[in-house]
Each structure stands twice: as C-alpha cells, then as structure tokens.
Length: 387
Picture (tube, helix red, strand yellow):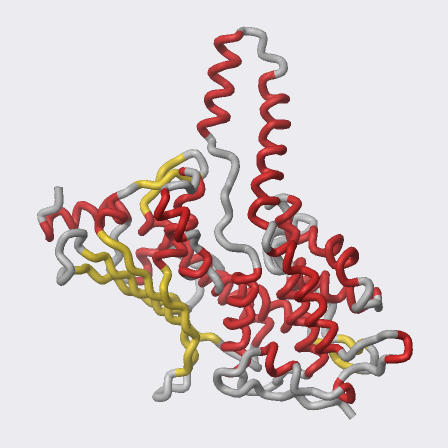
C-alpha cells in the first residue's frame, strides 16, 4: 500500500519536518555497514557542502576571469596593428565580463528552503512523503554548487561535487543520480531545451516508494526564483562601493526587494505571491551597467517580475493540483531622497488575462499604468521638482 504524505504545519521548516520521521518511512538500510538514517544523511551532506557554499562566489569570479583571459587572447592574437589591438582590448574591458554574484552560498540555500516550506504549507493535497522530502532537501543543497566551476551551465556541475562529497554517506548511486537530476533542472538549458523539468521521467518507484520528480523539481525551481530578496545583497560591498560596476545592478535589485511572501487569501481562497520593493529617487535616477548597456533599476524590476511570472506559469504546470499559485502582486515604493514623507507607489498584478492568443507573457505595460525608468524619472521631476 502506497504511503500517504504528511502536511507541513504553518511556520514549519522542511528540515524540521524531515527529522520527525522514523526509519520505517524510508527504504531499509544496514546500520551494521555504517549506513545512517536518511535525515542524518541529509545533515551530513549539508555539513560537507558548507565549505563549497562559502566559496561559490569566489569560484565563479575566478572561472569568469580565466574564461575572459582565454577569450581575450584569441580575440587579439591575429591583430597585428598595435593601435587596433589596443582598441579591441579596450572594448573587451568595457564589457565588464567578470560578474560578482550576489549570495549563492548557505544563506541562499536557507532562503530557498524557507520559500519551498511556505509553498508546502499551502498544499491542498498530495503532501510530500518523507523519502521525497529527503530528495528535495538534498537537491536544494547542491543546486548552485556548480557555480564554483563557473556560471555557464552551472546546473551541470552539481553531479561532480555530489559524487565527491556525498559518496560516503549517500552510497547508492541511483539516489545520488536522482538528486543530481532534480538539482540540474532548476534553470538554464539541457541539450538546447528550456523545458528542463519536462525532460525528467514521470513519477516512478524507487526502492518501493513513489518519487514525484517533476513536482519536486518544480518546487526547487520556483523556490529558487523566490529566494532573491535583500538577504542576497552584499550590504558591505554596497556601503563601501567595492562591487564591480557590471555587477552592481544585481545587488541593488536584491537590496530593493525586502518582502517575498506566498499567502492564501481568506476571502476567495486564492494563493498569491506578494513582492514589495523600496528605494529612493536618487537610486531610481541612476543608470546601471548591464550586458554592455545601461538600465534603470525600475526597468530591471519590471523584467525580473515578468521572468518570475513566466516561471510561475511554467512551474505550476507540474505543481497542480497539489498547489496552485494564481497571481503575483507587485508593489514598488520610490521615496523622495530628501523628503521622508513623500513617495510614489507603482503597483501591478501579473496573472493570466483574457483569452490567450499567444503563449508569451506579454509586455509590462499590459498589466497596468506603468512608466519605464526614464518615464518615471521625468514624472518624478515634474511631480516633486527634482533636478
């Protein structure tokens, strides 16, 4: 008989939930061969990965630097004219290729667990089974460690680290491979395919227990999307001005996003994601370097919330009917830099509207009275008399 799932209580972490279950809820194991209960195996993985989590940002920067040097050598090797070579080198330097990532370490992992736990607490049915919870937590722990080898295709790097760090306590290669697959589909491309979760096999029996891999992968992927708030920004780097210009917008975005909350409306029973951003008009007026161009923080927020809406629609395909997030409500507060009692508020809701004529998410202006960054600055200058 298939084991039933167990609900997470309100405010309960998935890690605390996992520790409640006895060995009877997991595949059999042999203590005489040194095998430990599954919750203990997860704890050992978490401890083993901590040094790597603390090195992810440095590893990614080092890999970017090496890649840039190799690319630069190739780009200028055949240029004989010294002035032309210098011009090309200046162009390559201007591209600001080395990205200083916002937090991808243990703090980010904790935030993903927090957001996944919030979603699980709102499940209407199909609650996780303990063995599934073990897989999900392990995949969350390893999902970003591949960045230590570089940002490009970092989703694929987790398997190598998993084999090196976990083989002694997660001895079963099938279990390690399942964790790797769950972690590797949290973003990016696989063989040129963006529908990475769709590439996973359907729910299957593993050691006589059903594991819903697509549902677990969708929880990880969307939880990762939600874990991009203030906690990911390098506050010291922002205060000291040490963050490279080409990376600043990522930290400013995270710093501005102070609230990410999934909640159920008591009146209509719909589940909504609420995002709240705040920053002052001086910051709103600044243009940040990104991908060889410049953009306002407000425009970055618009693009990122649209991306989040795409992820919502994609991940809900695999989470329904257990969990259905119906909309994303966004509020952006821009405070007058010199008047603490004056602010401007932008708000919009991202959700399916009307009859679908296209699978595209649409433009940000389709969702309300929205002004792009430059339009907003001109509006604030007119409204507040800013210079």
